[in-house]
Amino acid sequence: MPISRAGYGLVGLIVLLFILVTAIVLSDPSIYDSPLGWVVRLSALYGFLMTAIAAISTSYLVLVARTFGRPFIRVHHTFAVLGFVLFTVHPFSYAFLVMTPAVFIPSFRSWIDFWANGGRVALILFYIAVAGSLLHTRWKRWRYAHTLMYVALLLAIVHANLIGTDFTNGTILWIYNISFGAVVAAFLLNMRRKWRLRPKISVPGSKGSEADGR
Image 1 (cartoon, rainbow, N blue to C red):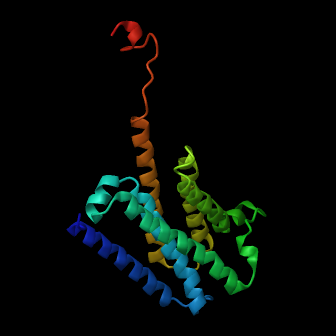
Image 2: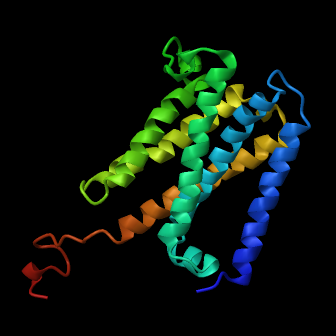
Image 3: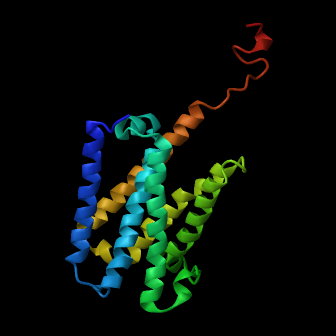
């Protein structure tokens, strides 16, 4: 099935969004205004958007397949894998920039410090979520691990808002917080659908139950 006109439009919007983010980063001098510093900043920003798109897509399986002319799982995994790679590049490039492995160690010195450095915990949860997905054919409860992706994104967005270099820019601030809001909305929509589709247990003596002879 070929990609639809809406699919081309959506791809165009995503590309324009990445171009906008790139332009803001490259035009905004900071303490990390160097080639490696740009890798640190852009890998985090790109990775969050890719992962957010993958998460949002789970609420629109049929629509995504029709729009992109590909099976949903292929589209979802494309964004998820790119997010995984970029989220991995971000901390490793930052560790190389500051020359210390301490950036991988979660901080529990204080409540604020935990959230400010929440990206460290987010990375761990992100890997667990990915591992859960890879084990979906061997582990019946893999979805519980995969759901940690939402917790990882929460930690990542709070971390970015508190100490993110580019979150001093209003446009970046709005783009990413709205993106996270869309992720939360998609998660709640999925939970609502699962709740409505849950097996209904008939209680003896309740209206409509076999005990009433109906």
